[in-house]
Length: 387
Image (cartoon, helix red, strand yellow):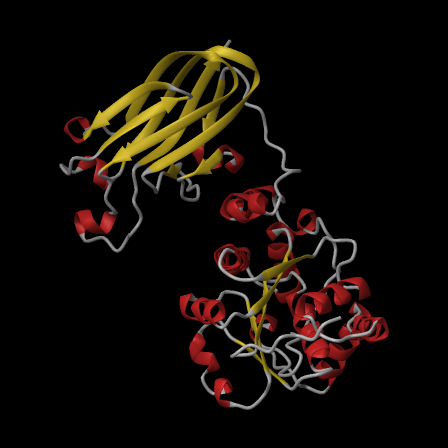
C-alpha cells in the first residue's frame, strides 16, 4: 500500500451526520494516521476554531465536524483535504439523539437537518468517501481497512483488526462508564460535552440499530423528519422503503394534518389551521387509488400579506399539465379564498398540483415584519373527487 501524500496543509476531515458513527470514524482516523505521522485533532464548525492549530508543527490536522460553515468549507476545499463522510438514515439519527442525549424532537431535527445540508454541500466540491452506518461492514475491521486504503496509510490487517477491536461498542461503553465514575463529565447535556482526546460523549453508545425511529418517534414526527430531510434521504436512497397513503375518491384532506409525503417542495411545516407555501413554486403529489382522467376539486385557502398587497404578485395553479386557476393582486381580497375546478386530464394514477407565484415578496418586505419567509397562500382544506 502506498504512503499517504502529505499536502500543504496536511488536512483530513471527519464529516459526519450526527449519530452516524462519526466519532468512531474520528478515532479510527487518529489511530491509523498516528502509525506513521504526528497528528493534532480538533472539533470545529468554523475556521476561527483552527487558528492556533494551524501554527503547530504536526504533520496532519484532523478536523471533526458536523455543520461546517462556509469559511470552513472553503478551507477544506482549498487545502485539498481528504474528507471521510459518515451517513445514516436521518430518522434514526433524530431518534438516537433523543434517546441517548435526551434532546427534544425539535432540537434533534434541527441539528440533524443542518448536518444533512452541510454534507450535501461539501460532498459536491471535495475529494471524499462515503461510509454508510447501515452497511454490513460498518464499524468492523474491513471498514477500517477501507478507511486506511482511502487515506493511503500504511496499516497491516493485524493493526486494522486491533483498532476495530478497541473501538467495539462494549469497549467504548466501558471507557465512557469509567470517565463517568471518575466525574469527568458534568450534569449538563450529554450533547454539549465530550472527552477531549476521543470526543466520546456521556451516553454516547446506543443500540446501533436500524429502524430505531419506530420505537422513539410518533408517526407525525417521522413524517416531519422525512419532509425536512427529504433531499438528503432521496440523494442517498433512504426513501426507497417509504410508504405513502393513496388518496381515495371523494376525499377531504385537512392540511393541518396532511401526510407530508404529499408535499414535494415549497411548503413550511403544518400549523393547527393548515400549511403555508414559502417559495416561488410549490408542488403537491397526490397518488390515486386508481387511474382516472376526470378530477373535481374544491380548495379553501388564505392569502399572505404579499398576495393581499398591491405589489404585482400573482399565482397560478396547474393540475398535471392543465391550468385550473389564476389570481393577480387586483383580485386578491377574498378571505378565505375558495378555489373550485374541474379538469379532464390524460389518464393518470397521480395528481401533480403545482402552485407558481410571480413577484412574490417576503413578509418583511411588505409590512416590516420580522418574518423573512416568502409566504404565498395558506392551504386549509382540499376536497377531491375522481372517477
